[in-house]
Length: 238
Image (cartoon, rainbow, N blue to C red):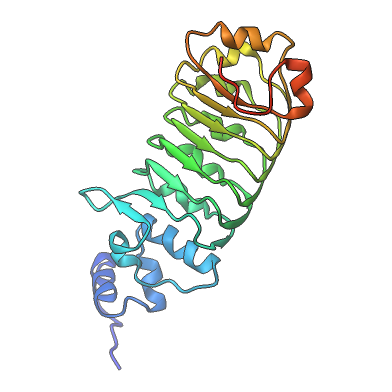
């Protein structure tokens, strides 16, 4: 038995000892970095145990930069379940999140809104619910795929500030309302917009407005609105 009581060790010194000799002990939880804490919560949400997070950059599906910071999560088709840990917002170097085709439920943690370096976000084919309002504040996104979930509510006008957005997939949710053409006018990079399987409408002259744009916008729209808006179910290219 080793006793470390009645000493003047600093917290960092204790953590260094624990991480080196007892990485799977309960005491190690107090020594986790924010990135390790997220990975630990992700594993525990799946019913697993928190281990090997100290070697996070060697884990499959994790990509790190040259400084050892997590910059991408490629954890699609992993059979992950539970809720997405709010500690994901502590991974400030993230540029890509692919958690699609898992079994996550609940809402997207609002902490994702603090990931200002995020360029790609894919959470499609899960069981997620709730509003998407804060997601559209991620102005660095170029790729956003939230299809095949149960998100509800309207698409906020803040979509218009995502000027770097190239692909937006919101199909097969429970969204409703309309998207003003003036909002889409502020998205010069947008080349694909998938909205089928919702209750979203455009104005009757949307087709002419889209085709007057100096670009080609591939649009997937719901069949029930096709007659009204003159936009077909198959990919529509102006």
